[in-house]
Length: 511
Image (cartoon, rainbow, N blue to C red; front, side, top):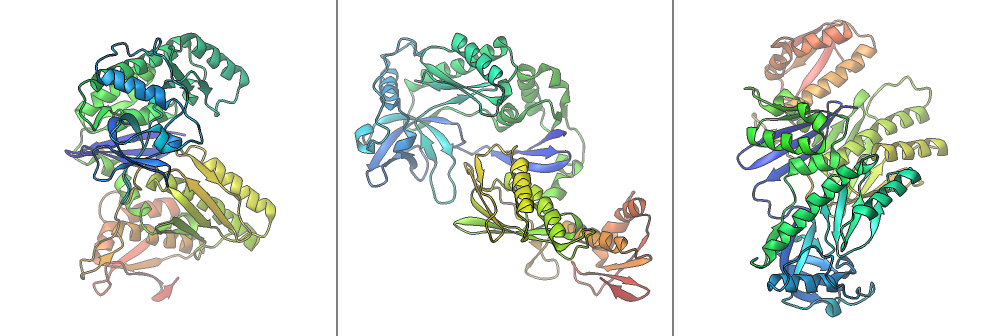
């Protein structure tokens, strides 16, 4: 498995494309005017408490107040409020917490009005960015994420990632953390800390303590509301959370960002610094790596898969619905059940990719092709679970229902990535499918005809599409010939609409 990170910079935003074995699996945009990113810590003011919701609305400087539920206050809220008040008034200069007296934890089933009051200053952290008509979702249980550990102020707990399976390794990491953990702080040990030495963990921990100290220094003169600790830029945060030995290439087209990433990699993985490349070419970076083509073919309502199968993805206010279709594909499978299983497994892989790519969240209902055998339904469920194991978003998958439906819940902390793939119709006032996706459809249909052993096929299509398929070296048609050893004659047809095409053999249409 080879992971690549391709970064495109513009004057207003930075785009990140994560490729796995050349296939686009994640797409992110970091915009300069984005005031609220997951992980940002703000000093804010309680606007009002609402007992019916057992929550408070908090002024964080957004057009809509942020939502703070009682369960997101954190048990150490009284200690946090006391700390914020003393630091803000300048009475406390020591931010280390080792000598700071702790207050009694709040009741886990208490009332919001007993915990916070209107106009009270409070430190909060963004856990969900503003989505649609809703303001940010926030928590006052703070944490600062590093490469190997997460620092939790006003806590004394040491937690080890569930994904570390070895009991011996968990015990080793716990012993190390007990010896280096600063008093007054809890620690969560991340999966990537497995096998790391104490010096690396201690360095990461000290960096986080330094960030906490720098944040506290801002509180004394901070205006309410304002950001006091920003999450690191998206490039660094992606590398912090995703980077491992499978990364083979990081390509960036901005020199400043290039040096920032090299410096960050020098800290977390010095032996991998050489994989960072500065892209300097007249061809745009996304074009060069085939990302634009993948975006055009991956974000529409219909998503094509191998061998003629396809997905239809619909979005409603309450949930997302994905329908799996076998299309008019031919299969060498012995039975309808085997065909259904084959298509469903292909679809499960693509669905796992689509959820990450579009960052779809909430409830997702997938209508797979019906299968009568229980072992096949179990095989599909296990395959989908394995494919989604790399997904960083918290998710839960329910086994297939009697109707062949699989329900998925997936955490949504940012607005869904929604890219318009339809283009203006040059022959009219409406919109049409992107031409690049039509070329993919032509190719899929052609492969099916080749499998039926058709020879001397003629493709009739619009002159623009015909030119795209035949011009350049090597042309698309030449690539077909090299791969399938069959030549396709291409006839430009002026009478055809932009996206219309047909195949003929000896003057007769074939399908």
